[in-house]
Length: 358
Image (cartoon, rainbow, N blue to C red; front, side, top):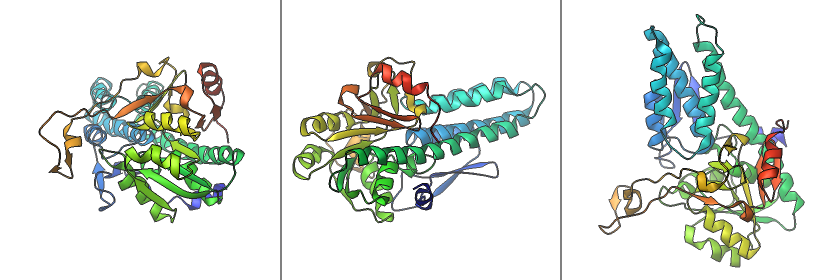
């Protein structure tokens, strides 16, 4: 299957070339495919903050390259360049608060910096480390896709009809996608009949990004409003809800795009299996439960305006970006290290002790 998956890699959101970071501007998809070039850590932090790049793994990869750009600039200035680099680190680490991959990638970059011998040029090593993070995510995507297909096959009956929320595809990662990677792989294996994609308000990642990715590959996809999910489960024979994650705590609670929690509640009621697909870098063992996760809120104008056009009344709007799905509503968490069914603290700890599967 691996060769088929590699052949199916048609979309990418991040490219590093000749010392410049290029990001596909996801704010204007699917109508425009615009690549933006970044030369500074400050620019990359702004790109993360303003949603040019989004999706937990992609944010982490972009931040790693952003720090490389910071190293290029600070080292060229000379003097106490490591101290100046802390400003870039702070800018990047504070770009968005919920996705732990951002902090994981930056901490890995910092650790690599500390291992460079004094007096050595840090630029080649730091560039190589960011590239390794990028490649590692791509490889993890492929492994998770294969594991997710195995899990679906374990429960295989008729062709599967699945629902996904937000975008956890190639646009959100360094490669094939997490949740969408599993869906792609299952379709290649002849196991998926149709994908329903929540539109995912207010940024419409489902209707703009997920549907675009799937349609470009000929995978049958139907967009639906977020509030139709329970009705779909009741009437359309859904068998799986498959989503990504921005942070998973030590007990298996999952922070993901707002609306995920209500999907899990509805899935439990209707007997629909619920799968979370995310790399192990998304698991934060420092947080015991989902109650500890900092959940981002954005300006309410994102809800009251669409495409720059005011649609809502002149009132306040509550705009949380993420919610937390308790572990007891999750059937399985799929990572590149393996699958955890019915997750809990002991199972998550055991998973994190494993080496990556190949």
